[in-house]
Length: 448
Image (cartoon, rainbow, N blue to C red):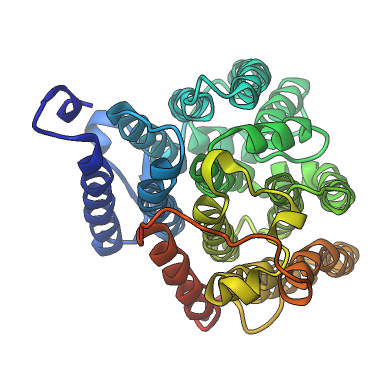
């Protein structure tokens, strides 16, 4: 934001500067120690805690920011140009997300959540000349304000019941008292509502279709991945506070996960617009992550399954949005299924990349998406949640309908478009880097 005040710093250079910052942050995050420790304990008094789970989530978020900035280089050459402040707001959003993953205290979590949310609101409505963008901003802002108020009310009730807003002290209180007191149950419920809204879980998913459709394609990809990673990280940390607390909410989360998976599939099957289909499929993937939340062990919680699935989902989703950012054309004129007829005969490499991302999201081996779903189903079985594991497999089979539909259109129909695009290598390069990540991550084992 400060650099935008200097005339010598041109808008064309902003993505490169942003990518440089993100790359430096990624290296720093990668080389940081992964043992559990309170960050600047004397200053923040245990409000921020880092461990291997938060480190992995931070890597996912920073990686999403890097690839989003890279995609924007191509996207804004074909569409209404942004300003320098766009990239500073992208950093504010990323900063809020990183704070959220580290938060171990309710007020700090709320501040982080609002820093992230306010920046995302701006990014969604950045193109004020597009009616769909303005509509998306209005819907997201109004509903997001309700989610924030639920979180504040929940925090107040938890404080009233436990006498503290720190996760560790709340856990100690539950260990010596009951997790089923009215204040704690009501507070946890309101906090869960806020989290479920942010991850677009049933029944708080209605906003996601229009918001994802109205936002610029790179912003949609960033929201669908980084925002979900940050929210699920703090959601998991809050739920893993205490075994007694988690047991109180297992049945509730079981049905939420079930309705989220199948509700998202039903919405996705009926879509003719690719962005809207991907928004609906994002609801389904939130359902899979909720399975992992149901199956977590509070005694030996490492978050490895959740972190792996977030990484696998992010590379696939970011990849397809990167491809759409340059294939979509000026004004995102190509976004329906029919617009991509015969793409494989005109741009075979782009079609192959999109097919890889779709197969990964569908859970076809040897992609990262398959391994992510495998780990989640395995963890559910280990936690004696056999029914939820079976429903997860059925949901994955149903999702193949709308993923394979696009592949069939690209490969088995005649082209009706020449797919001329702006001469820029960055979004295509981003796409093929993420193709490599899909396979590389699929070969990376984790310890459940």
